[in-house]
Image 1: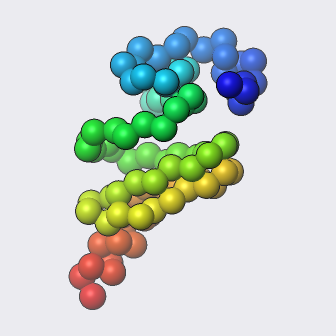
Image 2 (image 1 turned 135 degrees about the horizontal axis):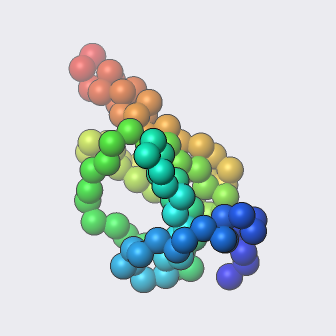
Image 3 (image 1 turned 45 degrees about the vertical axis):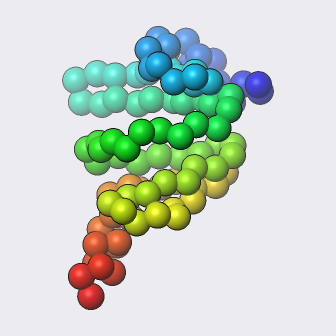
Length: 95
């Protein structure tokens, strides 16, 4: 697999995440947590929830559902603000 990350990211500690085909590097401190993930194969993740976050895709795509709204696709070099998408979805739902 091509190496997408620059050397400073590759020098971060590897994250211990038990997902087949995942390589992840972790930067965290008192006020932040940044996870750089690289998948060598397609992965279906179990349903889960998180606090506010944003994400980006350097290669490939992500398909996700937010609060039962399916079909959001994030392609190469896109940035996805999960909170904004959720708020837009909830506004559509309440109309």
